[in-house]
Image 1 (cartoon, rainbow, N blue to C red):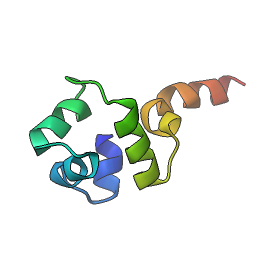
Image 2: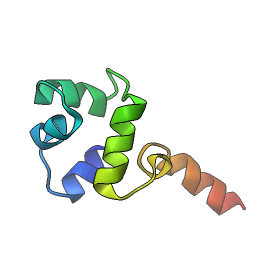
Image 3: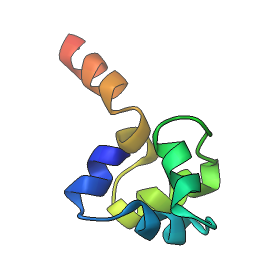
Length: 69
């Protein structure tokens, strides 16, 4: 998530607002893995960035499967 956020020149506060979180700290905890991202939040990020949930959260696993096929 961090890489995508930075690629799109967005702050943690921007995404906290998008997800309806009360503070950037709450978003940060999701970004670093202290709190899980809910399915609803994942869907909002997916729509926002125009990517599938798999592309956002499982990019490494998808890359590995494609390279071994």
